Image (cartoon, rainbow, N blue to C red):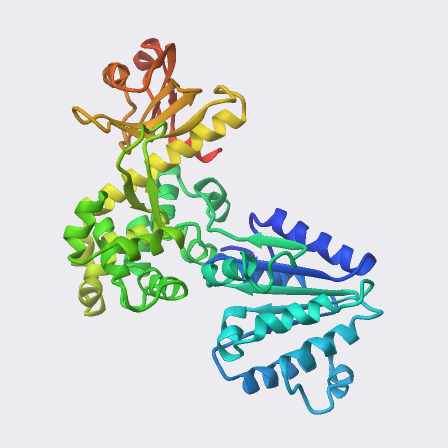
Amino acid sequence: MVNRDLIIDREAEREALEQAWKRARRKGPELVVLWGRRRVGKTYLLSHFVRNKRAVFFGATEQSEAVELDRLAEAVRRDLGDSAARLLSGGFDSWEAALGWFSALSEKEPLALVLDEVPYLLRSTPGFASVVQVVWDHLARDNKLLLVLTGSAVGVIERLLGAGGALRGRPTLSLRLDPLDLVRARKFLPRLAAPDMLRAYAACGGYPLHLEAWDASATWEENLARLAFSPAGLLLADATGILQEELPAAGGHSRILAAIGRGRTRFSEIASDADQRIEAPLDTLVRAGFVDKALPIGAPKGAKPLYQIGDPYLAFWFSCLYASRTQIDAGQGRAVATRNEGVWQRHLGAVFEDAARAHALALVRRGELPKDLLVGRWWSSRGPQCEVDVLGLSGKKTALLGEARWQESALDARDVRQLRAKLDRVPDPVKEPALALWSRKGITGAARREGARGYSLTDMLEG
């Protein structure tokens, strides 16, 4: 069970917020914008941050402007007490009046005002961003207000901060919270055996709420049955809300994601499987970060990209759950899980390959591989098919060749020889490139004698 009084792996973000609070107290107003998808822990982080501070925490809903302003007045009463509430003289007539009131309240004493889920306010008050801009631009330089704006609609917030956005250049601190990677997610489930940790991450992704729901005392099969293949399962239900924050209802985005989830990775394959024009919606999915458009590292001009769902949880949802929601809701989750066993194993293999590339990058950072090494995936653009899970380029030369396999047994000398045979196809290999193999249990002594480095899943989880 996770201790709800702890912040897990958001220490850097919390420290940045604390520093902003100190600056507001000593030097003048601070505007913080913190954004990221649903379930990444924004509200949890900020609720801990404002503890023991003079602060008002307001969570916006999708109600009218008048209702939201009434709710803001209630938040003042709840967080600052009746004496502050009496100063309201009946409440707020507008957001400009509200922000002006908080500015006056922080003239001499520091105050943190958190407006959670600002995109909802943009819908109920179309000029909200401009109101914030005007109030902020006219704040006294010695005012002690710390204003924090948050949002789960990533595209909306990034447009506010981008060229032409009302808040461009205003924030003194911008923080984007993304789902955790595998190594950081490990902190939520430190007692799990390494293979079960990868399974948990492959299903939950890097979302703290999902990871907290995973029962470390149960088997991975029991967790999936409860969280994914059950009508009330968190993992079954949550993807819809995450997607709705960013994607318009029209456009067939889910059909495209489902096609990729079924293993269609090339443009033509996706278009055929989705049975629609995909140029515009696929571009939307890439810009929103739901789909990764990958080119082979060091790709020649004209190389064709591959597409994959970048988020492990959403990749799991679209590959194993999306098409079977009706059956799961009807209580047939066990049968769905059995029928999708092969798809689940394929998904685990893809997550394991991504983890191997992340581990190779960690080795570069630690100096165990050349510091100028660029690491990525590689595949042949011409001629017979050839794929390399982990390829490292030093300049334009291949200096690292790696294979990652989600298999239980250690990789052996034959696997090293198969990997070495690919040197004839990869970009301009150096005289003695490093050969590396990743598997659940690493490599055998014979593989090491063949000249390979080996890494187990336990090594990978250490970062």
